[in-house]
Amino acid sequence: MLKYVTDNARLLGAVIVYKADRLARNAPDYAILRSYFTRYGVHLQSATENLDDTPGGKFTENIFAATAQFDNETRAERAKGGMIAAVGAGRFVWPAPIGYVTGSKSGLSLVPDSPSTVALVRKAWTFVDSGMSPYQPRNPLVKEGLRLRSGRAPSPHSFRIMLKSETYIGYINAFGKRVRGDFEPLVDANLFYSVQRKLSQPKGPVARPYRKAHPDFPLRGTVLCPHCGQPLTEAWSRGHGGKYGYYRCTRCSCVSFRKEKLEPEFVSHLDKLSLKQSLIGRLSRAIDTGLGEDAKANQQAVRQLDARLEEQRKRRNQIIETSFKNVFSDDDIRRLMGDTDRTIRDIEAEKCRCLEGQSVDLDIVNAGLALLDRMGSLWAESEVAIRKQLQRFVFPNGATFDGSEFGTTPLPSCLQLKEGVASRKGRLVRPTGFEPVIYGSGGHRLIQLGHGRTSASIAERPTLYKVGLWLSASQNRSHSSAIPLSRSWPDSVAGPRPDPCHLPCSTQEAGGATNR
Image 1 (cartoon, rainbow, N blue to C red):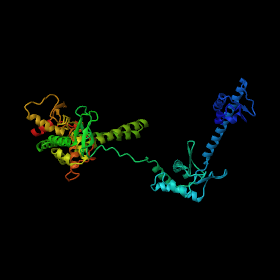
Image 2 (tube, one colour):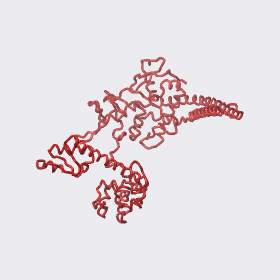
Image 3 (cartoon, rainbow, N blue to C red):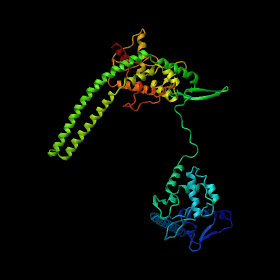
């Protein structure tokens, strides 16, 4: 009608309707149409109502439009309320989906369609559950006669909606409710939910996950840029008929090292950091001495904890005897019993920790320390996961490389022993003071930690044992040429994994053990 008015405005004098509410049942829509006709010079007339352009006529006309909107919204509200009540009673109040026909008002709301149509509907879930994609079963089912109520074939979108509809297992999801329907389900619930799991899977091919431990570039993330300190990433370059690997910095475009040059330099650097057998023997003796002192201290601590535990148990018995005499109220008795039980649990937990600290096997420590004399060959012969673990152990903060040599970086205390011996051989006296010196991989002084001791403290010796247990556990995994170092931390060792960068300084500890 609007197009006809636009094309024939010069020939038209008025648009006649039966009633104003027949033109629109919404006041804003009625006003838009009224202004549209006025713009083209066409009047609006009603066959049963007096509409004119006077102020009173326009007022009456607006009342007619508002009354029509009120009546329309009232009917919609009543209809929605009736639908909600019907759904709450389990009745399906919409057009029947594929596989069903609408039932009678006094009977079931949905009735299964013909057996052939029901069989086609059930095949849809069977095909998807067998491994077909959600859209593949549609074409063969359409060829077999699957049709909508209108006689047309279901579109791919409507077919997927059918597969996800819980109506076919006997439920109605509407108006924020999930109600059991009064009709018969067409699909088994287990089959339906199995198909839903397949429908929820991501569409298309899944992107290959990013590999942090790339076998072609094991030093990625360990070697740092000498300018900005950013971990180097990797890239393959093709040219001159070959394929070449590079370690590059994403920030500094000038930093790029050939894979064939950087990795042999890294192996040589590990060989320089490896300990000699004599130094490993000194470290082992220092740990042995420290573990012996730890055992004595732990035994004394256990005896003290047993005495405290016996005292608390006696106190608990006294509280129980007092409760029979009604000396204290029930609330006080419960509070005293709770405090005593908590104290007993804390003492028992502390005792267990002391007993666990006594279970130390020096053979395991020595087997792990034996790997420290050939770290270069161990890295070269191992797989990428083992290499990454060894790199994190030796260089927890990474290592810079300027193209010719590796820079100074903090080392684990078990590798600082070599630096301490080397410094004693020099002509310069090592700086001393209240705090001993920690050396880096280049032999330079980095920081000074607590006062030097001839043996590791009670808190530090178990850490040295854990390091040896971690190394030896990896050695015992295999006897092949590629020595695996697969377990980053054994489950049998209690406590958190120590930070290799913060292990106790072993320079003076080994010296003290040697003097003894």
